[in-house]
Length: 82
Image (cartoon, rainbow, N blue to C red; front, side, top):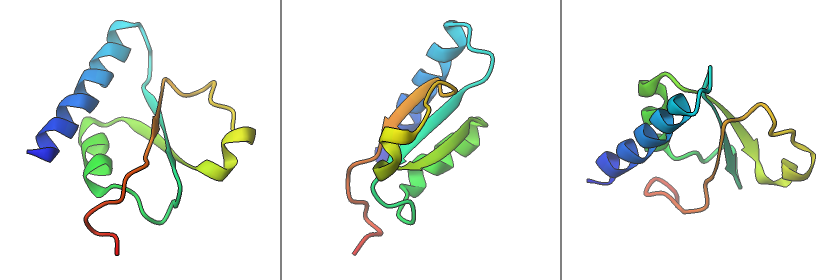
């Protein structure tokens, strides 16, 4: 159920970006620990063929987000974390 909801959210964002006239969708995925990404989220993005960039949240202040159409902040612990 969680995967379906995540898929629908990302698919909706992708479609909205296409409607807005974006030539290529690029997601900035901002996380606290780049070694602990949400695998379901990454799988959905890959299945949709969307380009993404993982950004450590400590680098937000010096990151240029102008090339990103969507910015997503990962903030929740995942089932595979200890």
